[in-house]
Each structure stands twice: as structure tokens, then as C-alpha cells.
Image (tube, rainbow, N blue to C red; front, side, top):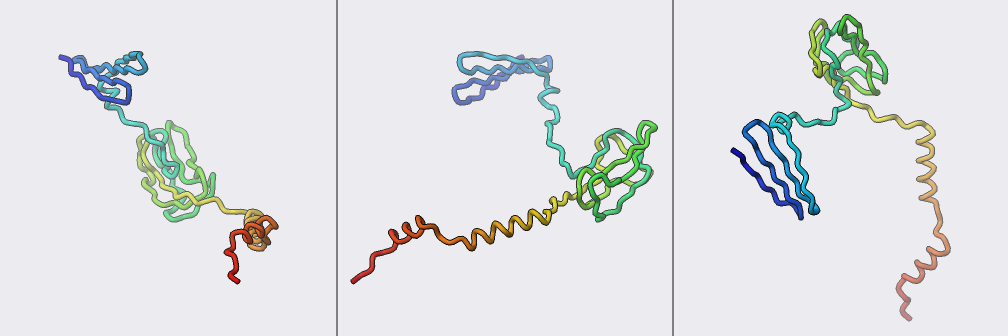
Length: 166
């Protein structure tokens, strides 16, 4: 028993044919050429990829939290130690990937954690400007405020000024 779904696209034909054996055939007709591919329902129902949030620190391998070295609200710098994590008989040091503040700690000492579990949420702090960058910005602002009009700007201003009545 085959079910067909047709979808109209601009000058393209897209057709999905479902077969009883748990697979589908996707047919795409574009520019006079027909392309077909077969995929399973499992493939169609797969979890879509989502860009990871860099502020979330997740477990990369199943293990046990040995010791938490930071507290909620604490400011951490890049490469500061956050916790000791034992996995596969190895002690791993989880470090801060950037400067920021520890927003939330989701694990407790001694807790066994499966792969992909959210352990920390660190709010990223914007990079601080150096003194030299601040000086250059101030200098640029002073130049734009104190700049006198050029001869061309004065001439254009005189031409666009309304004529005086006599």
C-alpha cells in the first residue's frame, strides 16, 4: 500500500512515497532532472541537530562528580577549575571555557552523571576593553566633535541657504 504526498514548489516537483516496509522514497524533479533517495521512518523521525549553547557545561562521558570547586554566583576566569569528575577510572578536571559567572550548578558531589547531562550554566562576561582601546575611542570622538567644516562643505552650505530678500 503506497501513499503519495505531492508538494508544489516553484518550478520543482517534490513527491514522497511511503512503503509498508518502514521506508520512504523522496523524489525531487528540478530543472528537467529527477532525483530519488530512500530513507527510513527512523531517519525521518530523528532528533534534529541544535547548535550547542557555549554557556552550558555538559558531561562528555558518564562518570561521578568527585568534588565541586566553585559556588553559585562565583566569578570564574578562563581555565579556572570548576570540578573534579571521575570517568573510566580517570580523574578529569572540568575547566571554565571562558570568563564569566557561575549561574547554576545542576549536580552534587558524589552524584553519578550520564553522558550529556547539564552540569553548570556559566553566564559569559563580555570581554573587557583595554585602556588603549578606550583612549582610541575617546580620541576619535574628540576629532569628530572639533573638526571644522572643509571649504567644500562651506560652499555647499552657502548654495543651499535661501537667498536674502532685499
